[in-house]
Image 1 (cartoon, one colour):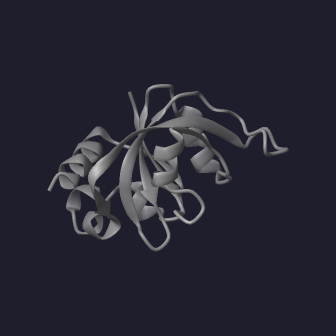
Image 2 (cartoon, one colour):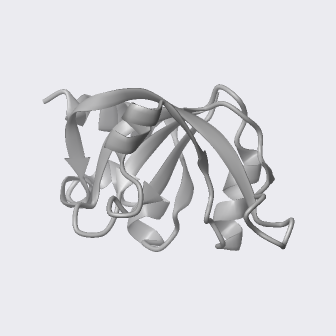
Length: 135
């Protein structure tokens, strides 16, 4: 199993919506590195749901329930989407500010490539975030 982080502006789509709908397609990704990451996702992988914009925090976990497929909303078949389902809400959100002061995150793409919307998460970072969310 692999771990991921997927960013979304909460005014466009938020974790409450995913919780209510149970599943959705993760589309509207146009950055080629983010698309490469989506193409690497497998059914059963887990992803953090990150509210970008003013919030800048990880709020929950979703499960990848499909492999990548061409986004039917796009003319270019290189633009792909995946299907995800609600897994659980974190006990408390983990903010970007908290991650910036934690040395364990210093080399992670979230801090180095701030505009990247989909990125891998190592198991060490995954477990650190889960631990922080329990405090």
